[in-house]
Amino acid sequence: MKQIDFLKPGSKIAIAAPARMVTPDEMQFAINWLKEKGFVPVYDERLFAQHYIFAGDDNFRAAVFQHYLDDEDIEAIWIARGGYGSIRIIDKLDFTQFLQHPKWIIGFSDGTVFHGKLNRLGVPSLHAAMPFYFENKTPEAKHALFDALLGKPLQYEFPSHPLNKNDVMEGEIVGGNLSVLYGMMGSNTFPELDGKIMFIEDVDEYIYHIDRMMHALKRAGKLENLKGLIVGGLTQIKDNSHPFGMTAEQVIAEAVAEYNYPLCFGFPAGHFDDNRPLFFGLKSRIEVTEASSVFLGNFVH
Image 1: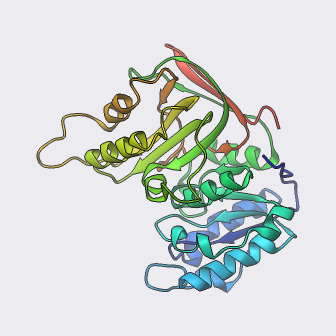
Image 2: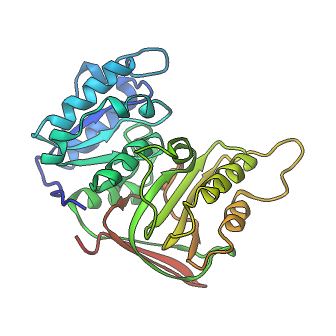
């Protein structure tokens, strides 16, 4: 993995919307937060463009994102929100200049497209809350994001889960939103999973969709050579009128039951208020025990 300098007071952070449109009111709290923390938010009227549900048409969004990728004064790009749309522009982007001066790309959900691309390019990234609804994030999530931007080690302890497979996993984390990963499978933006710790989360999906996606990954050989699997938020998961008969957690546990690596549910990242950051591509350690799970991230850079 390439090394990227962490941020410091005065660092410029661009806010870009490669997917759904946003409004000034939806961005204002995050803009103020960046200023309060000593960073310089960078954006202009292009952030608020609209084209159907998108923040401008595909070529427009790609051009804006390309501008920030190439701008050497920008030290991070904070994806404004998720929704849908990044997969429509990822192949329009040229990362040649970016690789000469890599910077942090921050986001989650639909931003999984960028995490996958960066993984294939050998560049770390930051899976974290985005400006949209940032006001509603817990103080712990906001504080952890500030620490992450400065390069401080991250440490979280969270309750054990009856479906966990206890052990210690250590290595690079990859992954993101399960539905987005499923949509990228077979492409050159799907992350390299062998020998890595995989993280997944999802929102507003049916249980049988979770089952289908997990078995598609399994049949493609994507789950068998992991160092471990971490499951974050499974939020607003739905069932059919005729119940599937298993929970989403049970579906995931069953899909990887034959593998010997650790399995950890309940990681505090996903589509909820306590959305804690985690680094993709930097060394992390997760101790999964009967009492609790402890995560330590970015302890070796």
